[in-house]
Length: 348
Image 1 (spheres, rainbow, N blue to C red):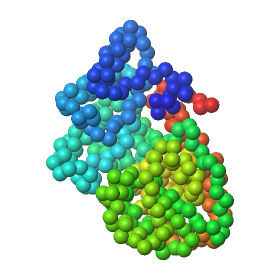
Image 2 (cartoon, rainbow, N blue to C red):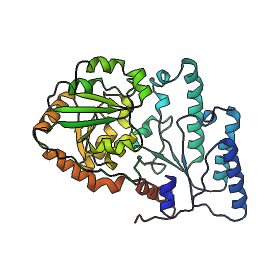
Image 3 (cartoon, rainbow, N blue to C red):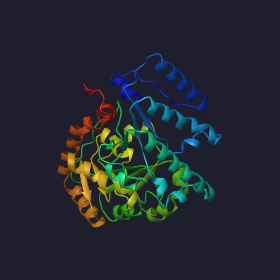
Image 4 (tube, rainbow, N blue to C red):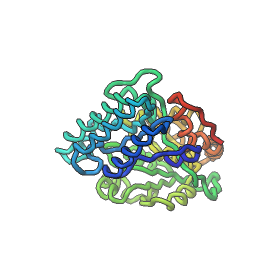
């Protein structure tokens, strides 16, 4: 978002880095405001870790971030917070951290939310469905949807010629932890269909820890490959596949989540298959950029049909290309000042 704001000709003061670096910027901002600097708005993105533990240092030091929030508020500077997740409220959170640590971090996550809620004018959420899961849902005009996006340099490379009879190539990129991303249903379904090939791209260490159950399902089959690509390697990986899969097993958490990989797939031009995910389903239906399913039986029927007839794949791929401009970081950044009732920005 920093680069996106700059691309809209905003002069951006970046407050980031270590506590020492942040304190230096805070002092500079206070001095410049006292000298007459006018700040249009402040945009904040919370971190996955609580502020007090973000650097692994002394928790009390980071309370200075809260004090700075209060100072911004006292100077009538509009504040918008992108609150990225509430996974700390769900039972699986305790499975992601060593046993004693989650009992420390949960209260600190709550403290972060409380401070943001108290001092901000607007909350931006990946989807509005997430508002109901906040400790206290925000009212109308105080919360807006601001999903992730993708940046410059995306776009599908040389498109494979897809035709009936050719192997249908499916791609999943993301986490594989069964606590959050249970792929077992999707893998079992893929193994039952002829003419399809699935590539799973995930972190190598995550596959080493959480892949045992999946390896048992895949044993003896050549329909599923696992790779650990990242960075520039992803562009080639996307260009070699026909459809992006988001057909993980149901969880309440994923009903409102907006994985950044969903938008990455749009950026690379792939249509998306979604199963059991309400927030994503609404965008897929609105822009007709994929398929929204409600059961594994529907998934079997859909993929089996694609093997014989690729016309829908081509149609949805064209829709993705048409919709890409709606999902860039620049488009997202342009909405922030509008929601904060400041000056409007036109995206060229």
